[in-house]
Length: 331
Image (cartoon, rainbow, N blue to C red; front, side, top):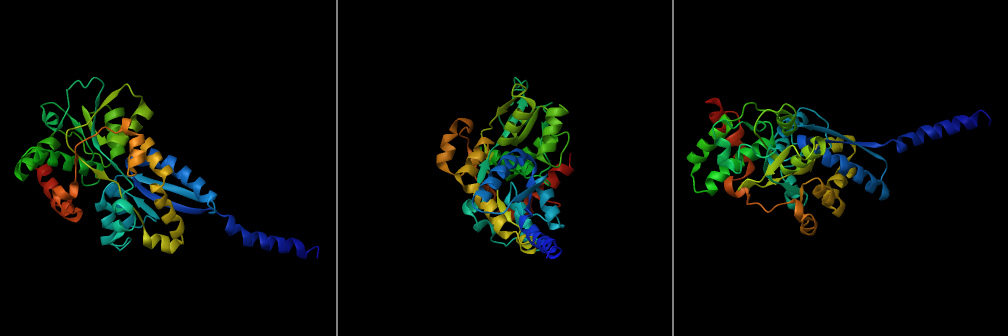
């Protein structure tokens, strides 16, 4: 027995070891969500274990939204994908069936737990007097915005500017001309929103950075609040920020339960308050009202009503040879 007991205990220890090992989730997300998910992941892990779940490790991958979608399509084993535009999750359905075609119906609010607005970040004192979209076309104004073909941030900028012209009574031809002129003001096209922020804030290139309003708060936290100002243009496309479980990955790795719970908790009161604290507009109207002081009322442009469904938008404007390529190639 003296020899058997240690062996038995050793075998029991080996049997129990996998039970104690933390499960792992990988969240493939876009550039400007680093701060939010840093806060949210810690809160979810605490909630998950309080509900009786096993220890859970959550890893993050960040980059330009379309670049991230391509990485998942090409094999990045993300359990969940949290994007800023439906086209990037649609791509996973179209290429390899990584998510179902009806993914947007599987969670509330078209699977988008919060929204955001497009804003202008200008230098302290707004020396160029940039207040609305036409001001960005003034001679000598340099505009920093990420590439619409690799960044949802860039696509929302493009669509907001196009929608501004339509809202003011212009036609499609006028909108195309306006957006073409806007991108002539762009000295460099970064691949994602965080890279564009680095270009503007750290490299001090450009007179205005166009980005999501929650990125303004990140800049304030990291670089100080006195170095820039936030300007809300008269028209901004409402950015609905969707999420989805990557079915083929979770089924292979046995993480569906954890992945589904992780995304569903985004709609909890705690998840919605963490969103608001990171300057993401919560879907819960009561929580949005709690934080009304940090979310100015803006004229939101409904993207689908204005431009059609996202697959049409993608084919028309952002595919190879689409409208963006046409206006950018002639510069």
